[in-house]
Image 1: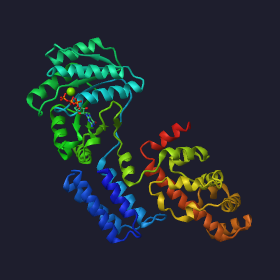
Image 2 (image 1 turned 30 degrees about the vertical axis):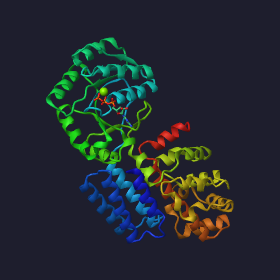
Image 3 (image 1 turned 120 degrees about the vertical axis):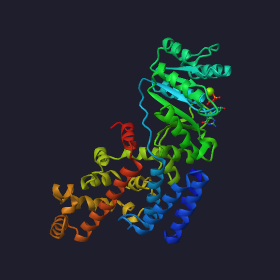
Image 4 (image 1 turned 90 degrees about the horizontal axis):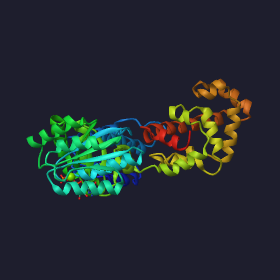
Length: 429
Ligand SMILES: Nc1nc2c(ncn2[C@@H]2O[C@H](COP(=O)(O)OP(=O)(O)OP(=O)(O)O)[C@@H](O)[C@H]2O)c(=O)[nH]1
Ligand SMILES: [Mg+2]
């Protein structure tokens, strides 16, 4: 799904103009991509008309080209479709995994165990699949490989007793129970899960589903939710199915949140679900890593950017710390739609930095904090005080506004949901 949409977006991006025809083509392509990924047809149809309407009817915001505006709309719609980023607290807890045959429960038990182990918690797993003798060996081996505690009983027939015993034996912060699968959610499975739940008292009940079930993930999640109760879903095998997108969208629509996705057979092939990652990948990912390095060299006030409160004072600091090394340009290029930024924004020469600095030195702190107060007479006063012209003052304010527009966008779109905070933390702020 993601590769295809990426191609469609690239096709659109490479067109000269974002006219009606180009937008129609993009909508059609995305429609086809989503349906191939097994996304529910009525959702696709709603999404298409929304993109079409907004892209063609809405006024393009200042500082953006129509093409960028269209991409922004697509970005937002896809994000909506894929739902919320998962909240996974790293703290002591009990987790019960359930699901149908072969969905990836045992593997995911290991992956989640490893996830918490890596984050410093003491982890144990309990093998409550007493139906298949091989299940015991499989989980035991995984536990040994990743170095977490294991409890199981190869001879046992009652999973509830195994769980009870396991809870006595294990002294761990995080305890994960791997349960037996069935062909369908039948009475037997419902009973078994509810019995295990009664003794285990899990904080989390995750349904494990493979990506290749596509949009039927919704029905399955809903029926488990109804009879077992769920706190989340893990979608596995995202690496080997073209229907993963459909499964994720379906979960989002069932109202049960996706917590993790599995994308490989190895223990490290697990990710906390974050749709922003997917969407930015589809639209053209701003390379956060290199952006981190760039930002490190800047001396902008991180709080101000976080608040989206980007004043002229910040602008001044920013342009002064961006010498002719082209940092500003590079930073702006990292924005989600940065490829085609207006040259007025990126074209910041040393001479301009100098003249802007002189102009800003002639401003009052009121003007620096809120440039919207700068009208005709103030503009004249500033120009006179700095030995420049009113058109240069106007030019500065315009440049500031365009940059602010981008910084706000940066903050809201690319950096939202904690990415900015993470980034700042990494940088040691
Ligand atoms: N490619 C890929 N394979 C996976 C992933 N997760 C699990 N598998 C594979 O899927 C197969 C079944 O995984 P298990 O973890 O045994 O599934 P299960 O739900 O415990 O199966 P039962 O206990 O028999 O119901 C194994 O071969 C796993 O290696 C994944 O994210 N990607
Ligand atoms: Mg299993």
